Length: 255
Image 1 (cartoon, rainbow, N blue to C red):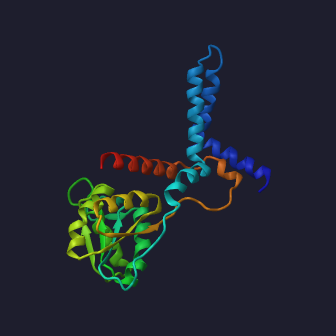
Image 2: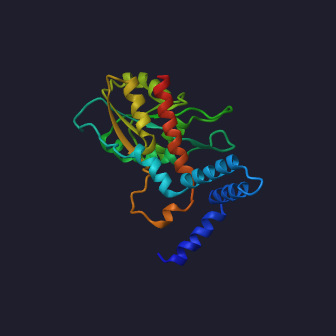
Image 3: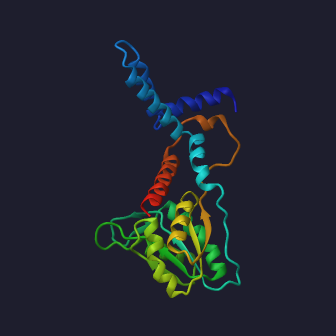
């Protein structure tokens, strides 16, 4: 990568959001140091600029996501073991104007893709868990997930849990379905960044169940460092990571 190309990418990165927010807050911080000096305000603005820079740079995203995703071992129970059930946690949906127009969102699709081949190869029952949208007439996210699985060609048993609103409720409300299947092992499918919280809830609420992780959609980039990794690009993954840390802390405090 040439220096001129890096400069071109840097100018672009700092002139469009979220880099523009970094630029504006940094400039306001510098201006606040001018007479009459407002040192506290200037310090706050420059700190905010640095935080926005960190959150929006790929290096910052990787730093926040890696502890959530690293160390998760994808593992399945032995094929010969009876009583295995797979659960796929919803990760949001897109709701259209017609009530039946409910499409699994990007994270949900990643989770379904991660579950599909494995569930079909092992002929396991699959629980789809996710609640309804606001308003009348919409099908649940769980039902839209099951419909997509069928469209892909899955012919096995699909069970729906359509009331859970949180990860804790996902695991709490699938208990009757697991008991109905005489399940002894549970394979949890969710996004890699969401797996630690999901496993914590599953093991807390299902202490007699052997719980296995089957993560999908890893977000922490493992490629070698590039100078472009320090340029603002997107805050999406950083905010996902912060939300997970907050969720883990809240669940451990509340439960």
